[in-house]
Length: 213
Image (cartoon, rainbow, N blue to C red; front, side, top):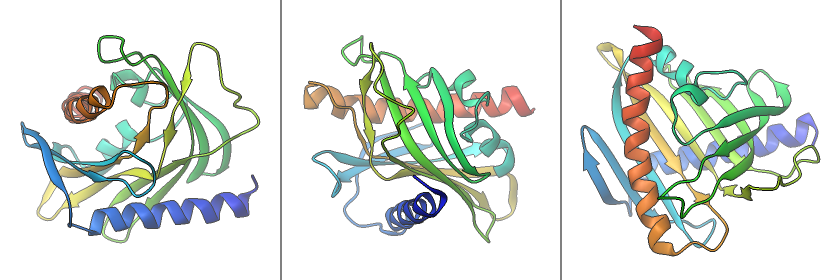
């Protein structure tokens, strides 16, 4: 994949995730608590669900983003219990790369370790929002590894949005649309994502305090 192809794909993914952000129709709340709301609707990308998480994190957008940004040696692997490693396989620009993310076993080991290879585009918007947008890709440097199941992220992303009049708070909106692959009962998948996303917000808040207070 060259820069032109990667840029075009990244822009397409970013537009899709923006549409998810703008479209308020069809969402059903599946988990609420501690200021975090998780909702879902059927995906149009694959036979699964698109999940949306919303919550306010105490911390300026740049500090929150610092805990989330997809960089090798970054903070994400230090606090996110669903990420065991994050590698940058190919970097096109400062805002566009291909990453490989590994995840641990989950759901009492019903879900075995996964790996995901994604094209990731970072966008900074005029209102101060920082967005990360991603979609699975194939890459010659990333053959499937033994002991991992290859999962596939359909268009997904995260927005760190400033709150007017609240410089030290950030609205974080996340979209997960993941095919975990393997032979998993749908009930396991359906229970895993809402619980995992709630934990994501709690752990992100702890990380912002730990690394930036």
